[in-house]
Image: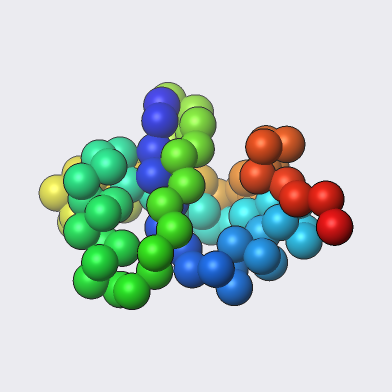
Length: 82
């Protein structure tokens, strides 16, 4: 399933350095919820990721939030060469 992970520039740099997002990995199923969360938290970056279809739903959040209990390996497109 497509999901949307919200973060800031410093956190994205940490992800790129490690090559992964360390567990637990939380994301929104609806891009509009991700945008709302981004605006309300001041985290300007929204990453579109592919989670397994059986990702667990977080309690609350209207059923729109899911999470993984394992690290998420970043696709090559998120990696930078410096």
